[in-house]
Image (tube, rainbow, N blue to C red; front, side):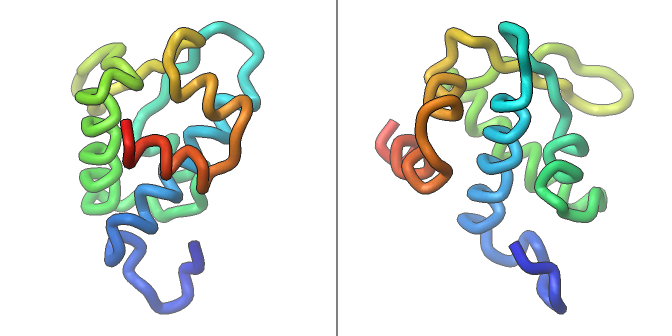
Length: 110
């Protein structure tokens, strides 16, 4: 997502693709059975500025994935919500085998 004079959260669907891309990148780099992350880690991985407004929008996207049963909440503390995704999640399998466009399509139909 280009950052030239644009508001990163101006287009929700583009931001959602960036979040999914960052999440897929984190999953692909992991060597274990699960990975934990926060909205700030997603923002930094996606190359987005970790501003409070943007982190709130990213958290909303992550909550949507949680409601769909694709990720789970690991903990909630004073520094926000930490999420977890395990090898058993369909999103984990999709991240290991398909590209971002296909994952976005799969989530739209899931």
